[in-house]
Image (cartoon, rainbow, N blue to C red):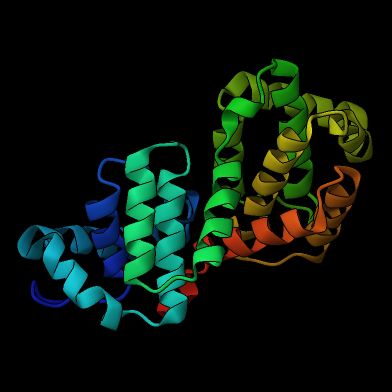
Length: 248
């Protein structure tokens, strides 16, 4: 771990969140990522660095510390941490960091919009909607024949309560994934986009690519009538947020 006057690129993630999103829940890319011990230590080191050097110190070192890919990942994770709230404070924070890291304005706006869609849980209001969408999520997680720990954690978070998850598993067993996709086709466009974004998280959360999961994701995108540009924007934003490999 670096000394108090030094800051490693991954540690800067913790520093950025401490300055621009204090007290917020970590985004799924940081809550559920593999290697939690190393990641947690790096985030804590970043917070400690800010305590010693302050916001101004971070503003001074950050632009020269991160390369383009690292800058995009840090920006995406701040956007992910702020996505659940629609506040002036959050918009100001993202604008400040975007300018500091020289994030393209249009790319930054598109990324923020996609991650806000991911966090828009208020779009589903009825229990039946939550059960149906959760069942589709379970179907995707099991498409490659296994549901790993990180996927299970994301499913639990998405469902919100154990009863919804239990009902969704029973519904999947009863109806099968093809019927389930048809069951949620009648959702509104913003609801379908919300589901699609959360399905994409399942593709990244376990750190492995699966052809079977990709095929089902493509099928969902088509049957849910998600516009190509919308799906591509969601995929780019979520990949950028999860792409911690840029830190080596």
